Image (cartoon, rainbow, N blue to C red; front, side, top):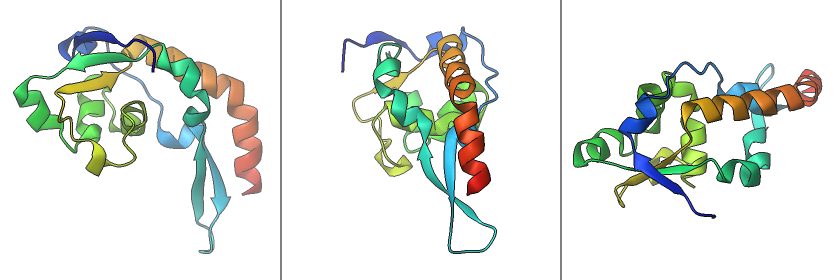
Length: 139
């Protein structure tokens, strides 16, 4: 990864926090074996890893924050983006495939500032909405 900007977790609070995106708005679904149930096939955020990396900042955590957010990216997403629906992005940029891997053992967490994340997600949804709608209608 390229150089990561460093900050404190508190700095993310100053950005504001009212993103209203969620996992499903960026996900392609496919039919499952259960009638009427669609299962996620791919989340498009993964297609934009290279573009997103330049905006990732590394925040230092206090010992209290480590205890509070260890294995709990939904709480971190809620506290700093005011929605737990973006926890998958926190997992993604911290290279954790599940909450079990979200250990914060090094005392740091990678985040994207609110204003930047909102612009990134908006651009992806605007650019991909026809593809997402078309694919998900056929699933």
